[in-house]
Length: 282
Image (cartoon, rainbow, N blue to C red; front, side, top):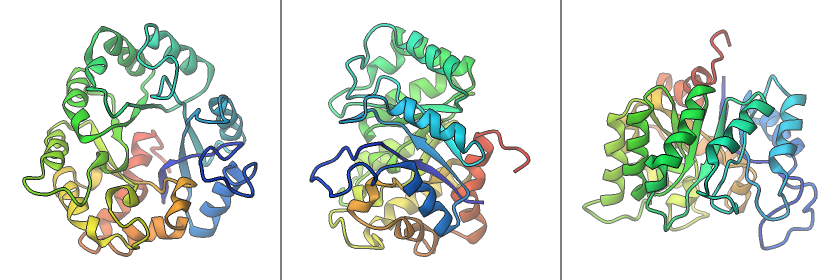
């Protein structure tokens, strides 16, 4: 089984430069087609209520309901582009979403210039208490400097899985002593912190240089510390189309990360996330 831990879908293409098909390029039908073509069984859709898509949570709730056997909605809750970002009442907003839709998790993007202190402050603790109450997975987008704050949350809520987007923001070009990478590796001591093996192009300087071999030392380090039971592959579709195809996003790991044994690849490609989603019998 292959499960995509990180993809998106929108009713209108949110990025620049413009594209000739903005009303269809990001739609869920495109994602499902790619999944069918390349043998991907299920996917977690990371909602992002960004430009032209203020109702992305609603759109994804509708398509996830239509494809309950394949798609999981992780709603956008107070992400960095939101007017409610780290404003009072986050816990109530998360509760309202969790009561409205049958979700397995949610997503929260941190601003790069944010130190992450909100996560373990009074408002953040109340927010994650709601997540704990509803048994939700926290999908967090942040940079390596946010890891210290994420560890505080992980310690406070040991039963709540935390999935860090895109190699937790580590860059392949980082020079020794690899301060950013080491900050992420320090989080491996918390058993409920997971790494999404996605966003290879974000970790490299040459965005088009498939198969992104220069990132392998980073991926190897993360793999050696977190192991296959705490890593989940993700495509970042359709944003990944800026750099490569869906197939490339899959094979950059499956074919080219030869240092990962085949048995462990099976966990990273789907078995780990399948367990987190509670699919015991599938």
